[in-house]
Length: 632
Image (tube, rainbow, N blue to C red; front, side, top):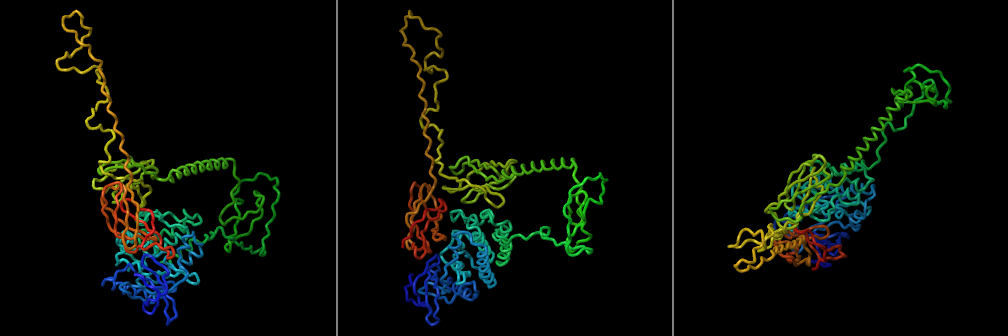
């Protein structure tokens, strides 16, 4: 429903469109009496049935009560020709997204942004409001570059509409969604804290923790995989930063930070240089009572000949000065050492080492070198990436394959998982980190592309592609052709077979020519049967795939499935980082099968001026398509 310039919404007059996103179109509007410019969000994705209309009013009233420097103010809300709208504060500075996508943010600036966002979230959580879609695109930059968090509660409003995420139960941006949002569990303030930790990860490293390339892969990773340590991406970060951010991204909401500001404060402390320990600090030595404030240390004296002396413990050490606790006096040059020595209290200056001590030190050094070498070799083996191999990559339902893997911790237990529908098979690695496991392919598995993963310790380490096809496409290559003889060589006897009435034994010598009986024709030379030709090997079955033909924002989307072998699959259309479920489609068997379905609400025509990009289709069977321009 387009709104033209001059349309009056409440006390605001629409001027022009300034943007368009998944939730609707944004217009600039002006309030003549207050001489104030605002932004009008027309929420096309929310249908106003009786329940949705009541829910929209409740949520809008709650959001409008928020008043905080880091929260976008809501001035008014209402309905225009059956479509709800909100009038919010106009911030011309743009969003934080372009700055974050350009690379790591300077540390001081990153902490300033995160602190402002954290204050806004903690304030909203105290008022019982969860944002549910915290990401850089929803953070606007004010006049002083202060962050202003926008779109509070809009994600929750969209849940009552026909717009759903790929899980079918919640909305949000996959790269920043908490595991409980993906799985459809109870969503609370901890989900916003998870998203804030993801933003911190992205600001400090320049990349997202889960950037698998596909929406389904990212959603799976949010629930089942552990992110890489930030310091492995940006080596300037230390392990203390890793522990703070990874706690914020814990799968269990109860393990995360209890407040957003606590998380930012801990992160700021972790990024500061470590303070020197007490032993590394400069120590001021107290002057002895009998000496003035300055203690003069005698210069080194040249060694002189001395008579051998008996061993004595009295000269084995020197009194120490330790700040205010210094006791005793500063000892002069030790006859055994050519210069003064100051040691910590209670520590003795060791006597000179003999030859036996040196030999022991050499032995200890050699043992330490061997130990370091062994640890290095073991560490190299442990750090080798896990590899996964399948005995066959194309199978039929009911077949069995052998899954093997290498470079797994010795004795490690875990699961071999078969996706799309997850099926698990347990394993235990042997002493040298190998796994070999026979896996039976279920009879009721869907045809199409699947993936085998090897997982342990709440993370999947390697994967391999598996294609399940109809059994008729996997005819064994060594079967004889119909009607052909199974024999491929001559008879073992090397002579023709006997016919009925003939003698079973051959004569050892030629018969006499004087016999009155008729002369018999000589036996023909036996001809070995021709070998049966080996049937050609069947052409490998291509992997199932899908391509998009066209996408219309108001009509339908058309795609072509290749080698899918028939069945049903889910489809979704994605644009500008968000995906909208379009339901399930039925696909016939064939090499190229075209299917059309209704384009879901939320997909808009491509418009570079308004920042609306191209779109693509994600299927449950065959992955994702390439991007195409969206028509009207």
